[in-house]
Image (cartoon, rainbow, N blue to C red):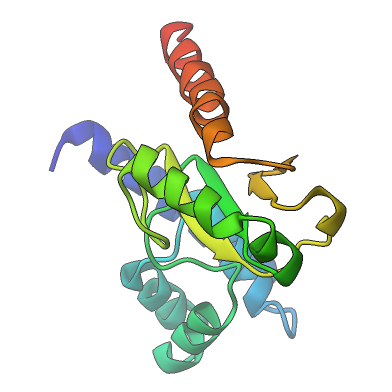
Length: 170
């Protein structure tokens, strides 16, 4: 393994130990531990779940059951930007499926997948409560409404451009 990657992983596990230590004596803190662990690793692979299981002496089946049940947890790497396409009734009727297809075509990924560069993860969601703006997508915390498939390339380009500028400024 690359030395830089190995060191990065070592730092992440050290942070995980700190999280576990901070909450382990408090009842009902497993979800908090999992949330903060996901913040550190970006997702919760089986290795991390097993590590938490061993440290807390909780069966791996319990931990994996929670991780796989709650949609806020992911067992696969997630992109820097999560695109949620609302497929609730109002959005669907106003063309959300076509918007979703445009995103899939533009990014060359399917729902539940992440782009090869790790920039975008695509999710289909239920109603997000912005029915008056249908069809709607979210990208992280930003909401885009009244969309057509032709709006998609410009929206995605904004994030790609921001990402490239961030890399160049480092």
